Image 1: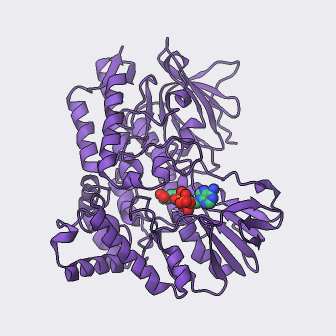
Image 2: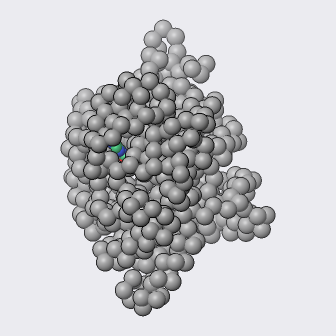
Image 3: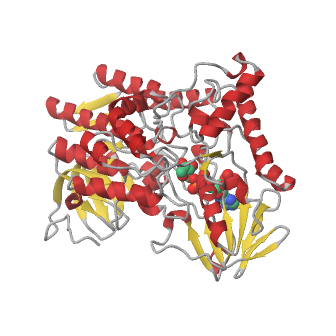
Length: 544
Ligand code: NA7
């Protein structure tokens, strides 16, 4: 535990302007903004014993960013952008963790971050218009504002498979990976899950282990990253263009510095279509989704053409036809689940020491002392890896006992799915702001871009309150209701809600099915946030 104590002696509660929960991209940005740019007294609490959030926890083999380094970073400080040298296109976890530690040091953030401290509860005091926050160590502080920066993907999902705890070998969830790493040499490894994480980990584990069995419930479309180290001239070009690059990330649909091409799939000849798709495949990365034909995510015919293009790539790469077919997704459109980006995923299934097991048709029945049993076979394993994802978007918030005005529990208010106004506030929970909360584009946008937008918006709102002498801000029930409806409406026009994915909570048994991220795209969302401000914070109620 950090030596910093946040409450004073004899039960006196330390009074703060703001408490920020989490010290990843969002928490760090919020701390700097509120403390250094606005002069507020801020305390950050972080569960991990280091800063970095997602990039602190996810140390599994092969963990790397799916967005390109030079725009998956902070844009708020030009000097930081100019001085930091990314090694290449898709940095691995240690490099991003180093970057976030560098930012924490550079801006002298650590003195206001208390590590190894989970926030257990936050209760709103109606009379004082303040939040009382408690930690796992029994500390108690009072803050005017509570800002959650808990991450959209940080509450691990370890499925409750019968016998889970009886396994005698080593087992790990990918987001709780040991710092010292795991030695796979000579080991029989089982990996459950073929989302982004499983797809990144598979080739790396396969190269080291004696044998790897990949247990796949749903096949996934993945596009090669085509990682490459940066040359000196790449660095120079990026740095020279940074202002323009960052500006584009704020204007594009998903926070990348590029846009879809201004053509629809069926508006060009079959040859040209193929050429465009081949070009995108060769270039690699998210451009396949966000830099291709403009109708990819709205027109099922266009989507099926891109989907079949990827299936044909799989069939071309994977030598065993049965394995290739098993790897071909047919139950969801491309992009309706968060698309992974890989390095050597499909080709790994040509190795002699790798086996793909279909647990859709023959589900896992139990984990045993020596491995795992499916409906039709038994697998002996030394190491079991859960790449089974997260209770996304709401999981980390609901782990905290958050009670708003009148003791209303967030868990109750969200029992049928999350309800927010703009993904920024929840009606009944005054002075609480949720960075990249459900109902905002969040995970459908390059995260640092979404985070910086939210932090700026929240800071402006607080500034407005100061100027007006207000102490309490709350989304109205009506504005929230209308926003929740709008989020649902927009998601019907997109393919995002069409798969059983964590976007809709389908990966967690019993979780209500709601499209949680706002699928209207970043430009529309930003426009809306600005319009609300211009209309004198329409939908928010302020009190002195
Ligand atoms: P994901 O994308 O949620 O993937 C989890 C995988 O684990 C997925 O293939 C799931 O299959 C599988 N899974 C989950 N629960 C089970 C059970 N009970 N049995 C078998 N298989 C299961 O998580 P990731 O960590 O890969 O990625 C999360 C995000 O991090 C990613 O989208 C990026 O934004 C970065 P399913 O598809 O549900 O059938």
